[in-house]
Length: 166
Image (cartoon, rainbow, N blue to C red):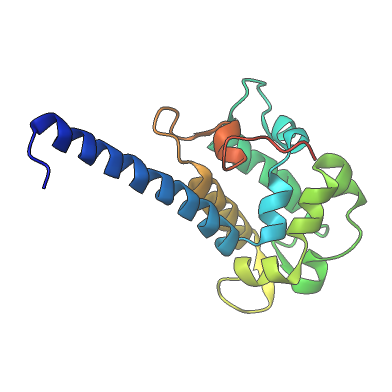
C-alpha cells in the first residue's frame, strides 16, 4: 500500500498517463474500424495534408477539411444529383480525383467497404449529406489535441506523431 502523499500523487499521474496512451491507441483503432484501413492509410500523407491545408499554417481546420471533401464530392457526383449509386461512388474514372487529392486517398476512399460505412440509411446510395457527415466524424475522431481543438496537426493526422511520406 502506498502511504506517502508524493508517492500516491506519482502513482496517480503514472496511471493517468498510461490510460491516456491506451486511449490514443484505441482512438486510432476506432478510426480504422469506423472508416477502413485503406481509407485511414490514404488520408495519412503529407501531400494530401498540404492540399487540404489551404492557408499553409501546418494545421488542418475542420472548415478546410470539409471544404476539401466538398470538392471531392463534386468529383464523385459527376451529374450533380446530390446522391450517387455505389457503382458511381467506386467508379474507376478517378483521374481527376487522383490529381486533385492523391492516388492513395482515392484508392482508399472509392471502395465498397467505404460505401457501406457511409451509406447510413442502407439504401445502396451515398448522398451528399451522408458523405459530409462521414467526413465530419472522421475529422472529429482524429481531433485529439487538447491544445489545438478543432485543428489537425501532423500528430493527429498521422496518428502516432510520425508522418507518412506517401
